[in-house]
Image 1 (cartoon, one colour):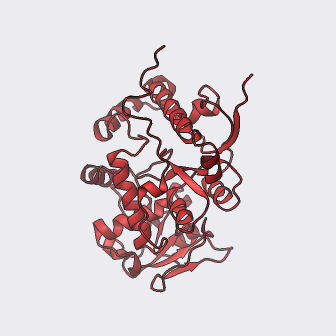
Image 2 (cartoon, rainbow, N blue to C red):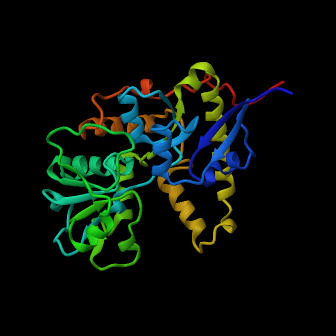
Length: 329
């Protein structure tokens, strides 16, 4: 019996990776121990700081910082998590904030400065809405996944352990909050808290039609020593992720599996706006475009010292044009 390479893979518990998690898809020559029972920020910290896993879904922003600092990781162009972000800018409704430029000069909270969600939000606020990130005083709740030295003109403060940005927003200690998740005061319908963009879906659709960007949040990181010792591993993992996604997309076409009344109509709306595969992997033209933007924003916002070329950041998973499309004897 041939022996497979054993690797640990830490990632979120998503439909597009269900087949990998359950073993329906097995990367050629690899036996995976799949770990999904942790939140994103914990997984990112444990992979980037502790190297607890061989392969992990990790914040794209933190991955850029890790690579800028020479840490021993490589990236696979597999993007398990994407999300539009206009709906995740929250305001205190008593502060007279009605448009993006009203944030200039304000106190704005963050889960952490380095988060990919916040990187995207600061980027489009600055470039699309005229809100320079250095015009805001930032208050960050968590330690960064990777420490970095903020530039001297960046007003970034770390909150005390007993402080949280969600409560501070509701109480008026902060004027706004950029957050990767829906915050509790909004979910609980606290009237003191609202969204900067009440019509966020329309803003996000307009953003996509203008830019063709469905924002990448996470990439797959892999320890460099594995790539160097087993150069066949990245491409085999890449194809396994693609196969798992294809199975999920085929399954999700069936409206009976989701307990939503208008699920199929929503699916069709998404396909009409975003196309048949919004979660495409690989270095496609659209993915390259937004990854270059992430690198640009990270450099502009003081987290990396140079704009790193994409060919330094991602392992080449190409195996030749049309090769692998059809197996023949």
